[in-house]
Image 1 (cartoon, each protein chain N blue to C red):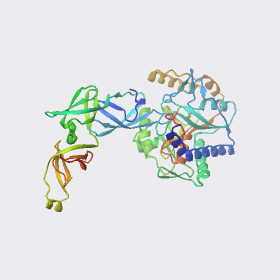
Image 2 (cartoon, rainbow over the protein chains, first blue to last red; image 1 turned 180 degrees about the horizontal axis):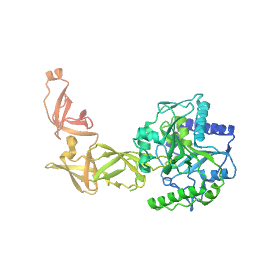
Image 3 (cartoon, rainbow over the protein chains, first blue to last red; image 1 turned 135 degrees about the vertical axis):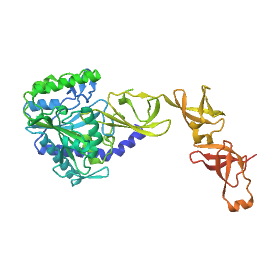
Image 4 (cartoon, rainbow over the protein chains, first blue to last red; image 1 turned 60 degrees about the horizontal axis):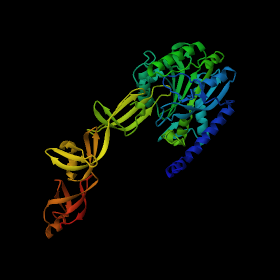
Length: 309
Length: 188
């Protein structure tokens, strides 16, 4: 071991200890609520085909990009409340807030919806703050963030109208959507409290069901705290036919854009027919730890990033 | 080159202009397209610009290298440098060298930033030793009234020096500030 590495790792120790506490109290939170902790495979034959999530290959199979598909297979067979710390791998994702290998905390609730998952997330974050700091005031990068419940909620339509001056629901434009979300909408959020962004345009629904009273919108929500995108929630789509059509469109788009051949996750689609209406959410554990460690970069909460391996 | 592979301090060519990547920030909405925000320094003008790229886009890299070269002589309004290992020569227009010409002495080795086979910038050493070619002789009365005077160096640079400096002395000069550091040797 080089001296520089040894010093770097020694400096990280307080943050790694806090990381372990965040995990410990997260387990405590879910156990109290009656959730079962599960582990699903990391090396799998297909990942959910998504245009902007590129998997890393492993002897013809793939490393998991998210534990979602297997957790939904558990839901389909009757498991009603489950959670997992799922190690995920996504090619090329590296920056201040990204490492290609990272951890998603995913949890699912039978008969829940996206609003309930956001409510769960707000309770979890407040619970961790109480346990770790004895208060619901989070100090992150020079900003005091009030974690009181409930969180501020704003729809995608309202947020884009206010900050970007256009309506992504009436005139969908996925490329402009991503640019403006990052460049205009996120910087426009209040900095002193968490924000839940609700009701995405149907085209960006991914694995979320459409709103029964407004099929232009998907029941999808994202959570932002301290400038970080922390979590993504769905009222899960349980219509296997609709899910297959969306996957097929993604597979065609991936092939057209990059030449990459993505496979249809057949076993998942077969199980989806038996899945009861459910809510699900994926929360970036490394970013949650960043918030509680006042870390400016993901490198401060991982002992070894892809650049240190 | 794919935008995904661009790292800090790489050199890019945009519309024929070379840029240094000062900062490269990766931002990506979880389910959205990756966005690469680059801060770029124009290597001709030193001005910086911000550019945004998306995954899948390609950029041209610029073949920019820093090479050690010896300053040979000035010819008209060009300065001629020679590579110390290949003996290849390259000439740089005076206006590109700017104020650094004040610290260029024939025979000195400097760092020349090359774009392909064209020189785009010259970096001189932080400290150079230059001979004084002209300064007023100090008198005893002058030492009482003034603590400093000006001296013209062999390169043409004018430097504030202590009163005890004479023509023919060799002085160590800090090229970052253009100030006198110490006297290296006195006129023999």
